[in-house]
Length: 146
Image 1 (cartoon, rainbow, N blue to C red):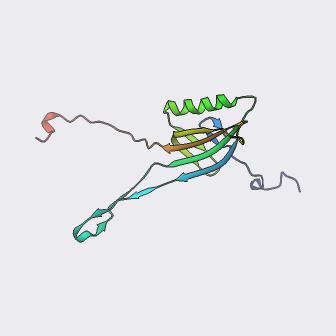
Image 2 (cartoon, rainbow, N blue to C red):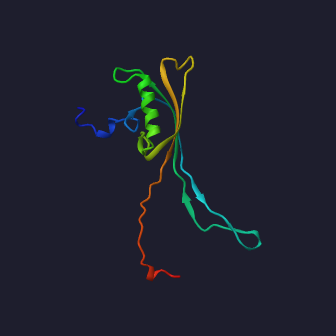
């Protein structure tokens, strides 16, 4: 049997993990929180009613390691992450399970200990930015209710 006759699904393709354009080497943990807030309003005699719900921004946290390579030093990778955070420009995060759109780095921490001396250990928390389109309309004074 030739590999050309095998179904393509037998050859797993692992998507790269990326934070914007930064490729992640090793992932220790990933955690996602998708929250739906369901409102409650009290009515007569103390009973509560639920009249609507809304989605909170997605929060994604990860612990990742970067190793030194020929292309980028560890200090340059860390500098790139800090610049990405400071830019406040939404970006995408790609993982094998999901693509997170319109994310910003909320927290970024770096740890060095005896096990991470020769790599860059990062703990980061990202939050989705919900972008909406806003428009304005001019109403003539004569049509405004007074």
